[in-house]
Figure 1 (cartoon, one colour):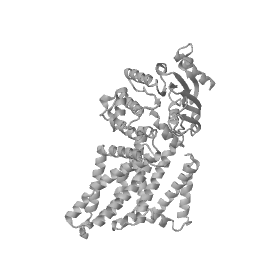
Figure 2 (cartoon, rainbow over the protein chains, first blue to last red):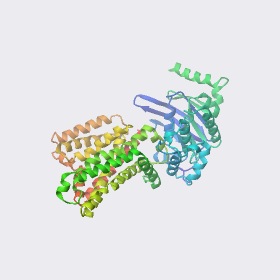
Figure 3 (cartoon, each protein chain N blue to C red):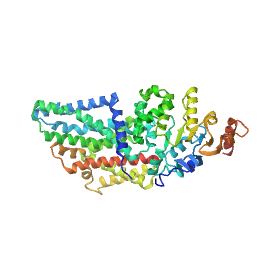
Figure 4 (tube, rainbow over the protein chains, first blue to last red):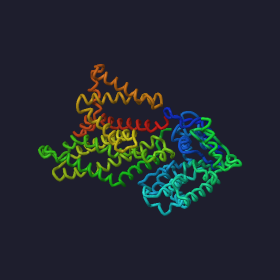
Amino acid sequence: MTSKDSPSSEVSIRAEHLSKVYGEFVALHDVTFSVRRGTVCAFLGPNGAGKSTTMKILTGYLAPTSGRASLAGFNPSDSEQRLLMAGRLGYLPENGPLYADMTPRELLTFVGEIRGVRDIRAAVERVVPKTGIAEVLAKPIGKLSKGFRQRVGMAQALLHDPEVLILDEPTSGLDPLQIREVRALIRELGREKTILLSTHILQEVEAVADEVVVIREGRVVFTGTVGALKGDESLENRFYELMEAKKEVA
Amino acid sequence: MLALRPRVVRAIAGKELRSFLGNPTGYVFLTLFIGTSAAAAFLDDSFFGRNLADLATLNRYIAWILMFFVPAITMSTWAEERRAGTDELLLTLPVRDGEVVFGKYLGALGVYTVGLVFSLANLAVLMYLGEPDMGLIFANYLGYWLMGGLFVAVGMVGSMFTANATVAFILGALGCAGLVFAGAWPWSAGIVGTLVFAAVASLTWLVATGVARGVAIAALIGGVLGLAAWLGGLWPGFAEAFSHLSALEHVAWFGQGIVRLGDVAFFAGGSAIALVLCSLLLNRRHW
C-alpha cells in the first residue's frame, strides 16, 4: 500500500480556509471545519448559504478559489488523488440527479461498472433492501416519485460500501414516512461510516447528527456538537440567534 | 497517469449508446438519415444518366447531410447531462475527464456507425441495378465513417457550451458547417480561418491563465488578427491555407476509391484535437 493509498487519519473530512468566488460574488469565505471518522455531521444553513458549493468542492466536482480540502486523506483538487478518493466516497448530489431513461437496476449496474465493483449483482442485492427500492428496480427512473428517486440516489451512493458519505439534503422532497426511514438509515450507516449531510431542517440535525457545522452567507458561524450548539436553549432559538447575530455584524 | 481504463470507457460508451437507441427519437433520426442518404444517392437525375452502379451522387451530398445529422446525435451528450445535473453524479465517480470524453465519443460514434450500417441498403440497390466495384464502395464508406467521426467530435465540442440541446445542435452544426464551407468558396475559407484564429486565441488564454474571465477579449483579439491576416493582406495565402481544413477536399479522394494516409490523418487528427478540446472545456469547472 503506497502512502497515497494509506487509510485516512482520525479526521475523514477537512476543509481548510476554503473560498469560492464567482466573478464578484463570494460564495464561500474562509470555510474551515473538520469531521472525525465515524461521525455524522450535519451541515446546517439556510438556502444559498454555501452548503452545496462546499460539498461540490469536497467531492472534487469544483475546485476552490483558495484553500484546501481533504477527504479520506486525499486532495480532491488533485486529479489522480481524486480518483482514489472517489473510490471511498459515496455522494448524493442536491436534488438527486439521475439518468431518467435508465431503470434503477441499470443505473446501479452502470455505477458498479465504473466503480469496478467485483460482484455488482451482490452489491445491488445488498443496497436494494436497505434503501427500499425493490418494487421499482425495473421502472424508468424518470417515472418514479421524488421519494423513490432520492432513494435510488442513496442506493448508488452506498453501492461500493464507501467509508465516507456526503449527502446533499438527503430528505428533500420526501414524505414524513420516507423521511423517518432515511433518517433511520443514516443513523444505522453512521455507526461505521463518516457522514456529512447538508440540511436546513433543524429537526434533522437533532435526529441524526453527532456534530454540526452552521454556515451562513458562505461563512462558518459554528462548529461543535449538537449539545454544544443547543446549550440550555432549544436548537431553533440558538439557530436563529446565530443567523441574527451575523446580520447585526454585517 | 493519463491512461484510459477500458472498463470505464466501455461503461460510459454503452450508456450513451443505450440512451440513444433506447429512445424513439433516436430511431427517427436514424430513419431520416437512411432515407436522406438514399434520396441523395438515387433521386438525382445524374445517377441514372451516368449509368454506373456507384455512389458518386451520394458523395456529392454526404458532407451536407452529415453536417445536420451528426449534431443531432451529439447535441445531448453534454447539454443533457448539464440540464439534468447528472454531470455532477458522473464526474464525482472515480473517472478521469478523458475517460468520460472518449466514452461519450465512442457511444456517439457507435450510433452514427449503426446509421451508416443501415444505409448499406444503398449497396443492395446498387447490386440490384448493376455490378458495383466493392473496393470503391468500401473506400466511400470508410470516408463517410471517418468524416462522421470528425463531425461527432466537433458536435460534442458544441454541446459543451450549453445546457440546451437545441442550442447545442446549432453550435454543433455550425462547427461542422465550418469544416464543409472551408472548401466551398474562398470567402468562406477566410471566415473559417478568422474563427480558427479567435478560437486558438481563446484557448491559449484559458490554458495560460486558467480563468474564464477575459476569454471574450482574447477571442476578439484573435479574430482581429485573423482579419488582418486575411483581408489586410498580411498573409496572402490565408484563404487558400484554411481551405485545406475542408472535409469536402479530403473526403473527395475516398469518393474516387483512393485512401490516402494524409486524409485519414486529417480526420483522425481533427477528431483527436476536438476531443482534447472537450477535455479542456470539461475541466473548466475547476477554473
